[in-house]
Image (tube, rainbow, N blue to C red; front, side):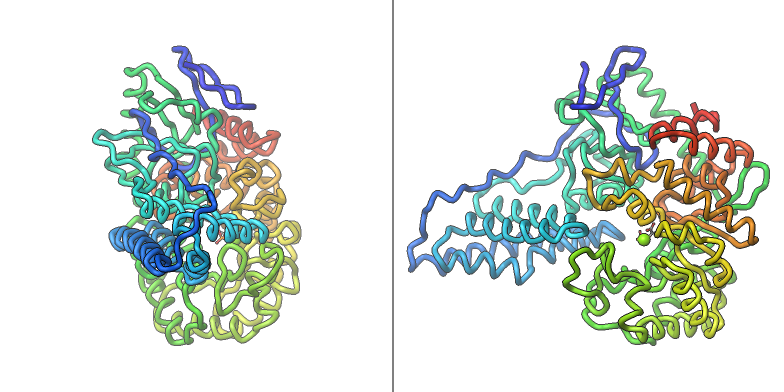
Amino acid sequence: MSATAPGTAALSSPDGSAVLTGTPVVPGVAYGPVVRPSGAVRLPADDGAVVAEEERAAERERFTAAAEMVADRLSERAGAATGASAEVLAATAGLARDRGLLSAVEQRIDAGSPAAVATVQAAQQFVDLFTGLGGVMAERVTDVRDVRDRIVAQLTGQHEPGVPRPEAPSVLLAEDLAPADTAGLDPARIAGLGTRLGGTTSHTAIIARQLGLPCVVAVGGLDDVPEGATVLLDGEQGTVTVDPDPAEARARVDAAQAAAAALAGYRGPGGTRDGLAVKVLANVQDGAGARTAAAAHAEGVGLLRTELDFLSRTEEPSVEEQARGYAEVFEAFPGRRVVVRTLDAGSDKPLAFATMPDEANPALGVRGLRVARRDPGLLERQLDAIAEAAGRTDAEAWVMAPMVATVAEAAGFAELVRARGLVPGVMIEVPSAALHAERLLRHVDFLSIGTNDLSQYTLAADRLSADLADLTDPWQPALLELVGVTAEAGQRTGRPVGVCGEAAADPLLGCVLVGLGITSLSCAVSSIAGVGARLAVTDSDACRRAAEAALGADDPRAARAAAREALGAG
Ligand code: PEP
Ligand code: MG
């Protein structure tokens, strides 16, 4: 068959089957029949029906019971999940219990609307609100719609939306997946994941990475692939081949499994085949994550996202509570480097006790280090807690600030960090910081590039927008050029420059980053072996050639292809 997306030509493989291309997210190959999420829930139209006054209390109770049922089911699944999956499911369950949403529905029922109609209308009110706010709130719109559909399904006796549980391992293809659907995926039944929308930092991508599920997002033409077709999904090449030659497909799966087995042998330390040392570190959010990372042979922590543990807190945690949490992470890496990032509050990670609630454009607002302009005590108390934790343990404690844009910000931060006997650094997430990397290094001891935000601010494209995923692709040559500029500043000054954004989780791109002069790669625990093992079979010269080739390309796809060729990856 030939499945061609509007504007996306399906390539043809030698055996004539259609090859759809998208953005590769998690390497690995999956082969199997296509399954799709269960059909959309039919939403009731407002036909003007009015519930009789004496029946409204019962209608309201019916709604409350449905919302509770949905929330309980999601919480139950959250309880059975771990890590990012558990968080996503718990957040969606929280929305099904959200007082604002529930009372908006109840008010409508009290005024005579049937419960299902009231749910649709109240949800729409929130969708409009979040869409109007724009930017970071876009993710919430998916959640609101998902909760709406689940409650309406419960009220009207329809199947709750979600992913199927096929008997044989299958490849799940979807327009996009609600966070709660992705978090509930069972890797024993779903062997791979392809979506028409989504980017490398979308929920789908984050959960697929955590589960180690081969995943390709933003695949053109995916909607035309019928359920029941057989596909070969390649999470490294970013392709979905429809009805491939079975023998060839099985050979590809076997080869990928052999490669995965080689990864299982990764023990660190990181470095190229010819002996250039490159630390392969982990991105974690708490002590449990740090222990998992140590077991996966991470050489340390390249990014401790301190804000993630406090997302549901209304009050600032005490210095002692913070110190205990940070000490747990340090304890997992005695004598090793642990880079703690100070609170990156705001934008996509709002904290009730730190974030300005009503900013028109939070991604360009008071987020990250900028929060300290209004509340310097918050930063100082966090640094006290980090210093306290460092004093109780013997990890090598480094501290960095997010969202630094100027030399003065770096200098001020460094002074506060050094005063506490810690090693200061800053994240490079803003183009101005990349351009002035060498000046920043006069004040701080290291830099760490956050490619997720650096791509957002370089390409002027919301990192959460599925529609703009091609712009925030970490292979964008302009982004790579800024990484190169920053790495060169590190080499001129003899200071380490790492990458801790999602770019560092891609084994092929990891080689390119090293070729650009990056000295450490920090990624999700599930990516450590892939990144480390790939680097271990690659010479530093090949990395440099791949970097040069990628920089010379005009777009992400061409950059990836050029790097693959330079690395001899076929
Ligand atoms: C980044 O922006 O690349 C980064 C690592 O920080 P976060 O994803 O937490 O914003
Ligand atoms: Mg960031």
